[in-house]
Length: 122
Image (cartoon, rainbow, N blue to C red; front, side, top):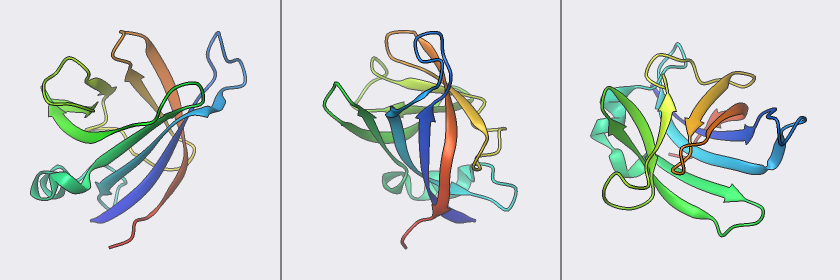
């Protein structure tokens, strides 16, 4: 298991046919040898599993990756009102070139491309 620094950038959508690096997430997650989230490591050090939401036209938001039902979500405040579920993060490899789907807190479902996945500082 290795903690990774991961950059997710908005992939192609109707509004952004080329995607957009101005809409991104910076994430810190533990990954196993198959690039899957190491749930035990995440539960052992939940404060290390962080997310920073960067939108060009909005203030940055800082939060954590939290358990959400049988999967995971980005959360910026206590409670579930602002959670952004990550579709199948528990079974999908996280590596450069792969895609993840997030549901924004307003309900919009958006694809994100993993553009960077590097070992995190200890």
